[in-house]
Image (cartoon, helix red, strand yellow):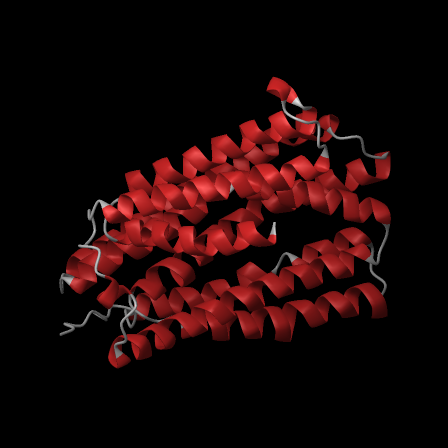
Length: 316
């Protein structure tokens, strides 16, 4: 698995490059090919199909590694075809001080932002995990369901970065503003629809899993909370990780998440769970307020239009 992560680092970077130069179809084709191959090989190696050895859990790791090898080979084939730029190793492994400085300026805050956001959610799990086992089981299921249903919202954020970055790079600021508004309206509609879907499917979904009655009750409550939580999460993801980063402002999200998650949400979660000893549902509700504390600040910055910046350069 460690080897597969190393390969993923290279392949995912290349796939992001494809998206940024409007070759999203090729990126999707390569990703889907690796995904379906991974699923197929999982079945083959776990259960010993088609004459393959029955490896069980170890087969999962082997299938993932093979899929990642195929994925990076497909990336290399596309690269050497020269669709993006002519393969030139003197450029590929060359150094450019100004480009490197720009890269650090925009990437480090974004990287730290994502790490801080991830660590905060891990802390949420720690808080819930110390309450009772039913809470842990229900939280795991609720998070999985929410992540599956909100993937379109995250996709809109990624697409927004490319779309707006192109418009601002061409100095078409009015067009960028219109596109940003369209993305916000689209994301709001999709997130509301996602919330309604969560409400409609929560009963059938609860019956799929082998949970205790207490865990089922927790899960039902968590899915109801998730039905409106996804709206705030989707809008903040679009603006912070999509619109603002397209204009080069990756520091805003970093500062915003440090304050809302580590100064407010995490301390409140610990206090409500271990000092006030509130019921598990109340603790979960408090933890899920983090996205809505961001909304007023994020909206104000969006309306200020300070994110409208052309960060492209002409490099010699």
